[in-house]
Length: 171
Image (cartoon, rainbow, N blue to C red; front, top):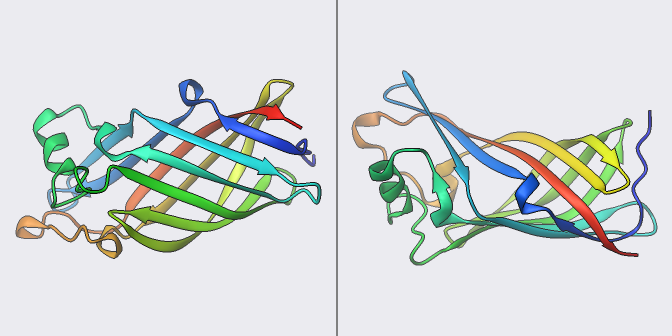
């Protein structure tokens, strides 16, 4: 089944969207999970079917259900939320391929450091009210200046998961 998406302006429905992270710590024995409480975004589907857009996450809104750890993640060792309050992803191009697969090429900015990022999302829900994209990808936190690693406890890449619900706002 091939998905079609109407042209026009789209808005992220923050109440129906989630962006989370997973990372192994304690030498791979513990997986820390967290969710960003404040997310926003917009997009535009062009007449040729391609799309562009942006997502923004409030770095200080990450909740891992551990207040002490969350404070440390907001510090200069990790997100440095006081100096870099937003994490952004700018989608330079998004194209439907292979039915419900969306190939996305963009730029992720964390701590003021921007890196190219390509990922695949899937249209998981489509109705008259909007559409939902699901994706999961990994990032190397050290590429964004988050190299803090006491006693070598934190290894590997961070997994980002997102369920993004968009509603059409204008043609």
